Every structure is written in C-alpha cells, then in structure tokens.
Amino acid sequence: MAPTAYVQPLVQSTSVFKADLFKGKVLFCTGGGSGICKGMTESMMRHGAHATIVGRNLERLQQSAKELFEKTGQQCLPAQADVRNPASLKEAVAKTIEKFGRIDFVICGAAGNFLAPISGISENAFKTVMEIDTIGSYNTVKATIDHVRAAKGAYILVSATLHYSGTPYQVHVSAAKAGVDALSAVLAVEEGPHGVRSNVISPGPIAGTEGMDRLSPKGSDGKSGLGIPAGRLGHVEDVGNATVFLFSNAASFITGQVLPVDGGSEHLRTQFLPYPQAVLDPSSVAHLIKGKL
Ligand SMILES: NC(=O)c1ccc[n+]([C@@H]2O[C@H](COP(=O)([O-])OP(=O)(O)OC[C@H]3O[C@@H](n4cnc5c(N)ncnc54)[C@H](OP(=O)(O)O)[C@@H]3O)[C@@H](O)[C@H]2O)c1
Image (cartoon, rainbow, N blue to C red; front, top):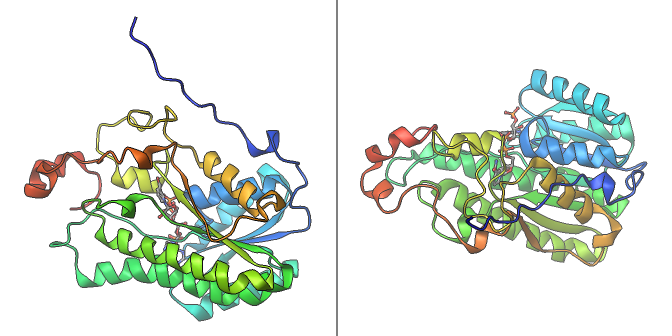
C-alpha cells in the first residue's frame, strides 16, 4: 500500500486558550463582514472580545454581526465604511468608541483580488487594489492609532505569501501586499515605545473563501492537500487561531513579524497555474480560471 501523508488536525483556539482571554477588550476589523476576517473576528469574540466589523456592504455586515453575536454571545457592531475614504473610517471609529468606549485590537483585512496579466490589467484596476489593500491599511491605522496607543493594544495586518516569489497574474496584489508588510514593520518600530505591537498574518490557500474561489482552478475540489506540508488546505479557523495567539499577551515579545499561516506551502512555492503555458498562452488556461483574465 502506498504511504499516505499525515494530515494536521484542525483545533479551535478555545481548546488551547482561556475562554475569557479578551474579556472587556474591543476589536476593530476591516473586511470583517466575510471570509477570513469574519473568521478572525469570530475567534476573538469566542474569547470574550466585542467587535466592530467594517465593509462597504451594510446588509452583509448586519447579517454577519447578527451571526457573530448568536455564535459567541459578544456584541458586534456593523459599521459601513470604505477604507479608501479616511472620513468614513473615522466615522466607524467614532461609532465604535461611542458604543464600546475603547479599541484594543485592529485587523486591517479589507482587500480586493482577481487574476490579470501585467499586459492586461488596466492602470485603474492596479491603482484600486493598491488603494484598498495598502492605502486602506494605512488609513485604518491612522484612524485608530490614538485609541490603540491608549489601550496599549496591537495590530494585525492581513497580507499574503504570493509576493515572496513572482506569482503570475498577481502583480497588483503582490505590490499591494509587499506594501502592507512594510507598513507593519514601521508601525511596530514607531509605536513599540508607546506600547503598541504590530504583526502580519499571511494566509496561504484557505478553503471556502472568496479569495480561493476566485483564484483556484475550475474543477479543483478545494480540499486537496497536494503540495502542502501540513497535508491539507487551511481553514479560516487556522487564521483565527494565529490571531488569538498574536493578540494575546503570550505574544508580548513578538512584534514587527510576518507569520505565514499556510501549512508550510511557502517553502514549496507551487504555482497554481501551469508554467510557462499560462503566461505564453493565457487562452490555454482561461477555461481553468473562475476569475477574469
Ligand atoms: N482567501 C485566501 O485564501 C487568501 C489568501 C491570502 C491572503 N488573503 C487575504 O485575506 C483577506 C480576506 O480575504 P478573503 O478571501 O476572506 O476575501 P473576502 O471575503 O472577499 O474579504 C474581503 C473583505 O474586504 C472588504 N472590502 C473590500 N474592499 C473594501 C473597501 N474598499 N472598504 C472596506 N472594505 C472592503 C469586503 O467587504 P465589502 O465588499 O462589503 O466592502 C470583504 O468583507 C484579504 O486581505 C486577502 O488578501 C486571502
């Protein structure tokens, strides 16, 4: 019989960390209405934090806030804002302070993604991703820093691993996430003496998310652990677990770091599209891709 790879089990942070770890603390999370950042918010709320989730689609935010409250019993405020618009973010911060009185933790997670070659992406589309991912993260830091300083709190910026090598059709996100990583390093150094920490979480392939759905080839079952040392795709709870650890006092000596949560796949750097065929003849892979080329 052929040997089979070990598959790392998925555990919930509540089986490792105290349930009241973040009692009385408040999280402000951009992108928290869906996907990975909603999962990160849920993990924090399971340990007693209240949260504000920020996005553009108010209806989805309201639905998510209701779900998060029902699952965790903690309060969740849906706040509509576009991270490209500093005034709307400041308003979301003001609503958070009015409701909860403080902000201890911030997740900068709002982002946009799609597949497009350098030769095909419009200048405007490139700029939009930079504006949401990089400038949006900066705007979020700027809008929250006074409160996070007052609370001696911490930031997590959500990045990716695709810019560690040249990932075809991801020039916009690669440039934007490299900027996010740099932003966190400077934030850690400038704000460290004020008691604030900042780290980056870089998710690898996380099953069942909009990002994976847009980028993974058609026909893949979304469950394959092929090319992943941990033996499986990631789950939003894996990212939630890393979030709970990094925001906890157990990570008080960890700042300015980038933590890939990818089951070790960054070290294999498996291309998700066949190379170089995908680059030489985009039409040869168009049928594999759910997003637009
Ligand atoms: N999925 C993966 O496998 C993967 C891998 C690596 C990194 N990541 C990173 O993980 C994070 C979450 O990704 P996801 O796949 O879970 O995607 P997602 O569900 O599409 O999450 C993106 C969120 O950002 C919000 N958003 C987008 N533009 C915004 C804007 N201008 N202002 C405010 N909010 C905005 C969206 O809400 P609205 O549409 O309501 O604004 C949405 O809730 C992203 O930073 C992504 O780059 C994901």
